[in-house]
Length: 370
Image (cartoon, rainbow, N blue to C red; front, side, top):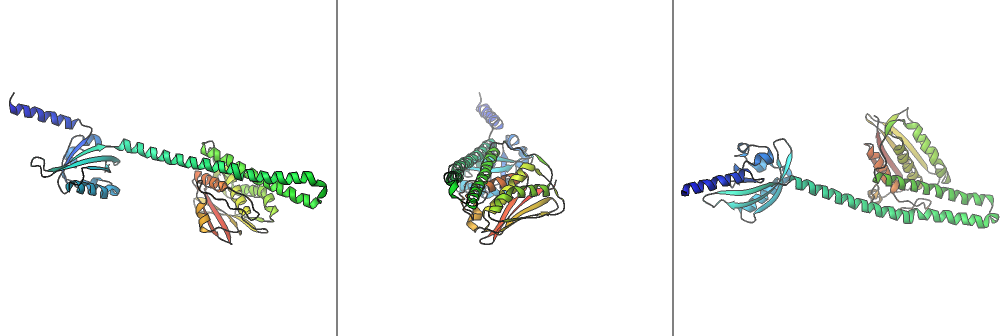
C-alpha cells in the first residue's frame, strides 16, 4: 500500500469519526471567529456548517447572561491558563437555548492547526436534570420546614388553649356554688372564646395540610361578595364581642367575583380573626371593597397595635417563627396568614399588608372579576 493511500485512508477515517461524533469540534482564531465547525453542529444546534463559519459566536450566538463567563474562558485558553470547561447557553436555530460545555486547547502556535480547538458537548439534558434536582431539594427543605412548623403548632399553639379550657372548666366544676352568676358567665365566656380560637387554628391546620398534599381543588364560581362578607362577619362577631370590638362593612353596590367559595371564606375569616387578635378593647375593624377593571380589592383594616418592620418581613412565611401574643394574650402561629397567601395566589390574586406600630394594619387582597 502506498504511503499516500495510507494517509488518505486515515484522513477519511478521521473525517467519519468527526462526522458521526455526538460532540462538536470547533476551530477558532484568536479573536473568537469560527473558521471550522464539524457537521455534528446540525444535530446539536440545527445550523449547517456554513451558517456558523466566520461569525463572532460569543456576541451573536451565546446568551447575554453567559457572555462574560465565556469570554473569560476563551481568554484563559488563549493565555494557556486553563483548558476550558465552560458551560453556556447557545442559540438553537429554532430559537430555543441549548446548554453546551466546551473544553479547549490553544493550538495557535501549531503550524498545522493554527487555531483554538474546542470540543463542545450538548449538556442540556444534564442541566435540566440538575435543575429538577435543585427544585426538588428546595421543595424538600420547604416541606421539612413546614413539617417542623406543623409539629411546633401541635406541640405548643394547639395545646395551650386546651390547658386554659381545662383549667377554667375544672374551676367552674369544683367551685360552681362559690361563684356569682356574672363571674361564672365571665369564665364561660373565656372557655367559649378559647374553644372558638382553637377550632380556627385546627381548621387552619387541616386546610393547610390539605394544600400540601393537593387535596384542596380550586373550584371557582360566580359569588355575590357582599353576602359572603356579611356571613363571615356574623360568624366572627361573637369573638369580637368579648373585646367589645366593632365590625363594620362598607358595602358597595352588588359585586360578583369569580372565586372559590370555601377559599374566600377561609381568607376572610383568618384576616378578620387576625385583626380581632391584635385590636384593643373597644377597637374597630372595617372591611371594604374596591372594584377595579379586572379585579376586586378587599381590605381588612384595624386600629390595633400594628407591626414593626421586622414582624412585617416574617409574615406569610412558613419557615419563620412568628409568635406574637394578641392584645388579650391570645396565642397564634401565623399559619392563618400563610393559608391566606396560598389561597389568594391559587386564585391568581395578590395579598399585601401595610402597618404602622401603634396605629393599625391594612391587609389587602385581590380576586378576579371573571
